[in-house]
Image (tube, protein in one colour):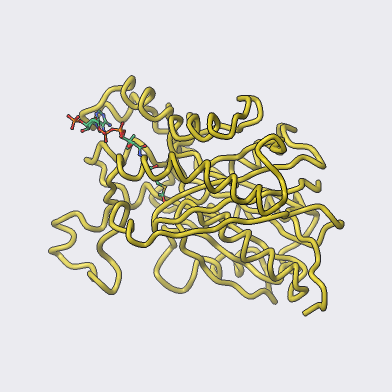
Length: 332
Ligand code: ACO
């Protein structure tokens, strides 16, 4: 450990989406819904679906390799792999260990982190501490989700919302004043029942009964989650800005969690941002839980929406309930 903290920031990004596209029209063939309802209530037109053989580590590995290439690094340069996921390949070994092996990060430590849609921001917060205090030089944060595998295909309230994908970021020391300026993380466990996967853990191990009751699928009180999200997105972004000694007017670019266009619009209104400062891709991918923010960040960076010196704010919320935000002085 170093005596003084070093600035840490993102030096490489990558993302991976599965090939199959599921449109709203496709969903109307199997669900009691309409294309218009889905589009107007959520902003989603289509989402991606992993194949039967594809698991979280497969998408996560591809995103990780692209992020390393973007940073000009190899698997062997990585000191720590953190994977944020609620759809791990299996309960254990961790998906982080599977990815560590697949990318050839032969001397890296590896662990998974569970914070649902806030997982990528939690991962950045944890990973950046190791770089800041000098324990590690190179931390890889991956968020990867194959939510299609835990969706009830007959539940019109959830299967319209979610999609599969993965994103990754490489964190390294950066110049003074650059990189992560502040984080705000939070949780509200009393809201855990609003969004959960009831069976398959130690509380309710999988049984014929849990399968009959469809408890191996996501259960969500959508409207309650919606109300929570509308409030917390704006609050969390403002808190991180305050910690960084900044305010709303200092935001150059916002990457919000891509859950519902109405949630994003309300956060944008609260932050008084003009639409060209906000990246939105949920129309193409739906809500990919923890993977939504890094995929959006990767796309925004590749399209040159973000430039060196920009103050970029990431903000998300999710099951737990959890939330997280961070302010970055973009350094690449
Ligand atoms: N098609 C047609 N009608 C539908 C559909 C559908 N796909 N889904 C629900 N409805 C109906 C309901 O049954 C209800 O009918 P009723 O009035 O006859 O009872 C009506 O539409 C309104 O339902 P609400 O749930 O009140 O609709 P709402 O406007 O809240 O939209 C939605 C539902 C889209 C789920 C919204 O609440 C939402 O986006 N919530 C946030 C969810 C979220 O972001 N979850 C992820 C968190 S991130 C993570 O950690 C994974």
